[in-house]
Length: 274
Ligand SMILES: C[C@@](CO)(OP(=O)(O)O)[C@H](O)COP(=O)(O)OP(=O)(O)OC[C@H]1O[C@@H](n2ccc(N)nc2=O)[C@H](O)[C@@H]1O
Ligand SMILES: Nc1ncnc2c1ncn2[C@@H]1O[C@H](COP(=O)(O)OP(=O)(O)O)[C@@H](O)[C@H]1O
Image (cartoon, rainbow, N blue to C red; front, side, top):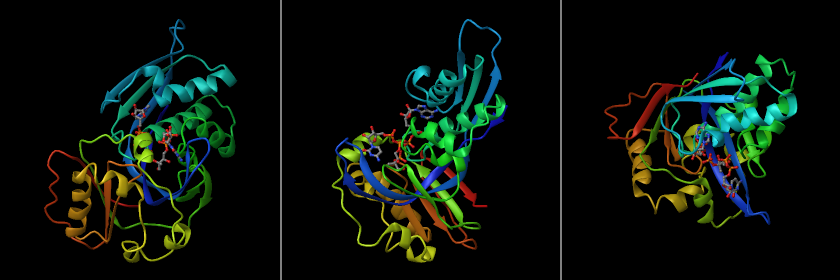
């Protein structure tokens, strides 16, 4: 059985408070985009091992045991004693990009196991498991436009469609650690809630919607800011860093002719949103 975990972008991100547990409260809107990994599982007949992870595509740092798809499998295996499986992961979503690729893989693995092994878990239950694997992981269970608050795990639906807009995603060869990006932030409450700003027309977002991580990440990596400026020069109606970086996305009007994009060696993905 195969599935295609997709990336997300953050439309606005305000870091409002540091909590006693070291985590931060934030406000953001998660929006799914069709940049996808491929994830397949088959039953493993060699019962000496619980799982075998076969990885291809972009490299993922760390040991297989720390891969979030494995953590997702082991989490459900503890509860439901699942058969051993082969896991095939084709990685296309860059890591350390603020695109939630690892979190998407984990959430899609939970959904895949639920379906393959007829576990009958509801979306709400799957969200509970996903939240144990990463702060933004649960978003990918329903995978619909979502306003997130708390540590990024308290959700409400957002009535928003960017259908028809052209998306350009650029990821320079820079890995931003989410943990490190948080450590440079001075949290503050925004003047206007993102919940209100997101309801305004896309062409008003530029002057109103902020990603607070830009303030801490841009001075450290000016290349990332340059990409954002270039996207605006090319006619983006809105451009911003996604999550804690290092990817930057631009939204272009449906009829806009985007000319001569050249981001050198950076990973670049372009699509019309559906
Ligand atoms: C902040 C966001 C916004 O989208 O960044 P991106 O990962 O997308 O860049 C996400 O919510 C991130 O979610 P996720 O990447 O799952 O975070 P986790 O693995 O749970 O946390 C990584 C580290 O970031 C810090 N962290 C994370 C979330 C949060 N609300 N406050 C924090 O301070 C903690 O130091 C934690 O150890
Ligand atoms: N399946 C996976 N895909 C990507 N990264 C993974 C995966 N499993 C574990 N990781 C680890 O998670 C970290 C963050 O990856 P990812 O969630 O893709 O980035 P981001 O938090 O920037 O959206 C990486 O450093 C990587 O080592």
